[in-house]
Structures are given as structure tokens and as C-alpha cells.
Image (cartoon, rainbow, N blue to C red):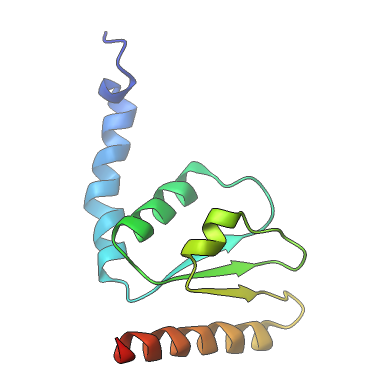
Length: 109
């Protein structure tokens, strides 16, 4: 058995899944969302966000009230929307407005 963690069968299976499933979905997306709940990000979220950045996708960061967004994430986010779980219609409207703003920016450029 190799000491190289990138030769581990579980890693190779995950990497294959990312290549075949995750990357095509992100490539086909017009916009991507990063959900920030305040807990530590999980590896899946980190991989998704990394590919969003590498594929130059517009990113809407959706954050729960009071959650501090890391500075680097704030800089790469095209929009930051506060999600109020007690007001799902208002949250949906804010996300829709952010998507329209991003779409308008793409048309201008």
C-alpha cells in the first residue's frame, strides 16, 4: 500500500465523483450560491466553492443573521444576501434581486 493519500481508493473514488458529477453541474450553472450558517465549512462546501472560483462563476453568498463572513469569501462574492429563516419570502426576494443584479452586470460587460 502506498503512503500517498492521493492513491487511496476512497480518495480516487471521490475525485472521480467530483470530475464526473460536481464539475459539470457547476459548469452548467449560471450562478452559484455559498451558504454560510456559522458552523465550520465542510470539505464538500470548500471543494464546491473552490470550483466556483476557478470556473469564474458569479457567487451569491447567503448568510444567516449575525454570521461573520470570512474576508476572502466576501471579496470573491458577487452578492451577499442575509437569509432570515422567519421570512422565507423576503429571503427569496433578496436572492432573486441579487441574481437580477448579477445578470444585469453580465449584460453590461
